[in-house]
Length: 199
Ligand SMILES: [Zn+2]
Image (cartoon, rainbow, N blue to C red):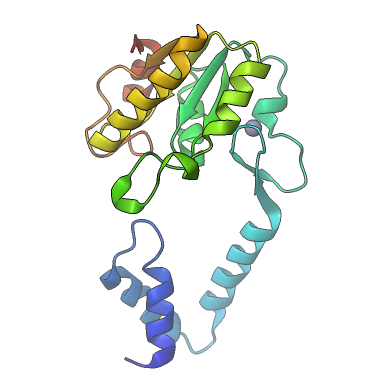
């Protein structure tokens, strides 16, 4: 394999959901286009994405760069007493699509995962505690995935948050095990939000 191809494959394979085989297919697809048009479109899109977006400093949602808060955090019609904690920014979009939740969000940027070296310090936990203290939060809905690491993260968050007198709930069962919020269909997710349970 040419050094330039290998470098591209290494980079693509770091993206979520892209294995080495898929990374190779992408690299060769781009390399075989003599006009380079597809490659330029991809590069332009990635540059636009990086330059035009930022994470909302409050909830962690991907938003337009240069904003103090995303549209959801700035919306006065959202219920400030309800806070939904998710693992990844894109999970916010999935739950918004259901229309079943009218509170605010907080993305952790991961979950407790010793295998991947994600611990308490890697997650946006301090910011979460600050928000719970500063905002009139009465219920925290843990909308995490359905796997062992997410379960451990849920237990950790419950122990951290519940002593403060806030009600801690969790999505009802029904999210497919191992797949998570990002892949759950809207009907299942909506049902899981509406019939959430105390933890
Ligand atoms: Zn926000």
